[in-house]
Image (cartoon, rainbow, N blue to C red; front, side, top):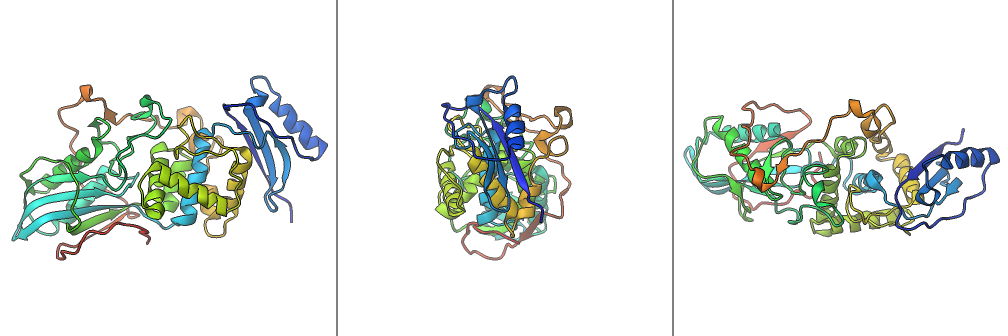
Length: 392
């Protein structure tokens, strides 16, 4: 069987210029890669490279392989590997509609809560689907308001080491309830914006809502009404890796923290990633994780760790094909495509001084894809439960 190799070259800014000695290899390989790394514009102290035999994990070439460097977007590899390993490819994010009050005939006396559980792919079409499901119950009037609940994760909207300018450009604020494409004011405005959009979707279906939409927290005894599920994690991971979506990476990291450390924080999620990598035999010396996207100036990684993550993820029998196919391919897929072929990022949240009078109305249609699902139940008064390990 022909031996396979990974070639991993990383040229990134380092805090310090530490280096590890190269390993013995064929002179032709050493010469070729050595010459490539001595090209103009590449600083040796800020450059690292490694070539592994994929079958054995043995390095056949290494340069600065243990140097602790800023990872930028390759930070997402550790998050995606961990998510596929511990959440599983079939995991789905959940968004739930609950009722606080009681039904009398065709009137709901009380409020509706749109509870976010960190779905980074939630869209206005999904809110329309939830509104359609609610309309199917026959209720025509809500004597109360719609509120958005994003308390599943913590209240921090950025991560340690982020520049203030990153919010709204590099990533949406890190809220557990955030709908793509909805403008909102202030870093804490996404939950209220989602509630307003759902209110408009309900009104478009002939349902009167008497109260003003806003943010809130659903009580534990709220009545489950309907919910929406995201695509499977196997379909979400390419958005994190190939498309290098920072918000997706951060939501997945907080989900890891909530599910396995019972804390919806970036730090808790990072702890789950580190423990998972350690169990997989990934060397963590020189590795530091301050966020999930690689935006933080405090992130550090080594090319040896990256190469071992690629090898572990690509050869895992449960999700290896999913992990490997999620990666960007130069000139063909993801952020390695020419800039002219990629969609430009857009800012969705606005500083408070730029607040608009109202967000655009959500379309009244129930557009969506069959890969998402939802259901309705307005009979039980059972308590609300978290969506830990939602798989299908």
